[in-house]
Amino acid sequence: MNGLLSKRSALQEKISPAFTRAEIPLGKRVIFINTEGKEEVDLLFEEIKKEIKQINQHKHSNKSYENPYISVNTMDGMFLDQRK
Image 1 (cartoon, rainbow, N blue to C red):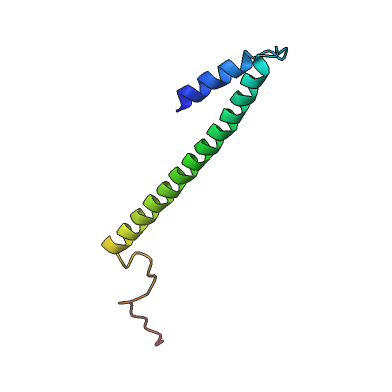
Image 2 (image 1 turned 90 degrees about the vertical axis):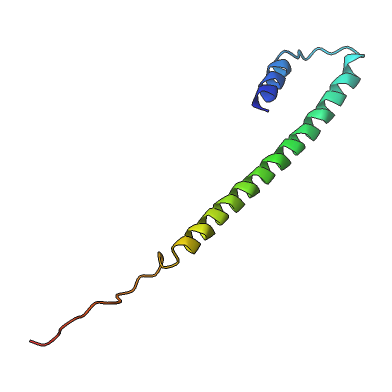
């Protein structure tokens, strides 16, 4: 994916602003495809972020299942003698 994006950006830099009449419709089509592709890439990244978040939640719940008392902070089993 990154290779294709870098190739695209290299090709975009080579485009010169003096366009002929035949290049104008082609340029409009390129702009349309570019915006469409950007939206798809953005959606893909959002899905990946959601999957990573779910994986991290599953890791956390698995750890709490293995050791359910890790977050409990109690003083069980401690004897305090206050007599003097």
